[in-house]
Image (cartoon, rainbow, N blue to C red; front, side, top):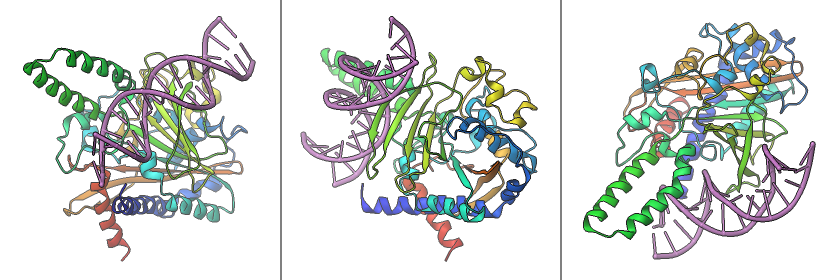
Length: 379
DNA sequence: CGGCTTTGACCTGCGC
DNA sequence: GCGCAGGTCAAAGCCG
């Protein structure tokens, strides 16, 4: 990776984390800290991750006028049956989220955590970032310009199980095609390759959560099978790859620890669950649900999908804006949630980018505008 | 024995 | 074309 890109990416990080940082202070989320101390939690930070997140996301709605609608982490995981090509979903592309891309430079992240620590008097902090990635629909619909590509293509993610499962199949097909060598076949192969390239552009939506935890693999109500582990460049901590064990469920998640703040675990979800949480099926829903969720319609009812509907996210997010190089104003939806659980306080930061231009996807393309904005706000 | 983790090999995409 | 890094596979081993 070139230095220019690294620099640009760092600038992106700075702006990204600047958003996190500002939101930590701009909003009245710290009020939650003293307001909800009676919310029960389980002892293990890992096993209570699901609970924590539900609490993080649901408790904040009580004081957030923007959020008339309950949204929990379970909602995040399940969402609802939604057509990502319709309605407002198409209105906003989302920040590209490949954890190494976003978090490999964690200067700002560490700052957020430390600031929060100072702010709340040394309480343990779970800091998580919900960072929705490109929508599948957007990928399909949005044209890819030579100078940029869709949001999702900014990452190196494979497109879910279907894609990965097709890898070998594709190789076999290519080999078969090689076997029959005609001029027509060659052109057909080219077309096939192009089509497959387009197919591979399709990425599952991704959400990255940053959580301060001692345990890498956080319990979220689903069952996961680890299928790989890789050393991460510039990091002493490996990245683990998990796949949902439910048959025909293509959801994956990556778990890695920040090398700059080892206390921070970065979990990236990819794909949509097409089933109910095993925890729910086992009758453990109540244990996993945050109290506020018990009073709201069950998020497990109906078909489930991941990620959450973007409208739901947007409902909960105050907006800010930034301008890109073309002086186009983009709405930014972001929020932080503080969730006190006895002596544990957590912060949820949700970033959302709305109404990006169709060709405004690549991280490299986003960086200048972020930088632009950064310079405007902080001369 | 089934389910899960570990781990080396392999594949793919991308930049040079 | 080559090298690198990310992502995935699958055999082997572990564990309850």
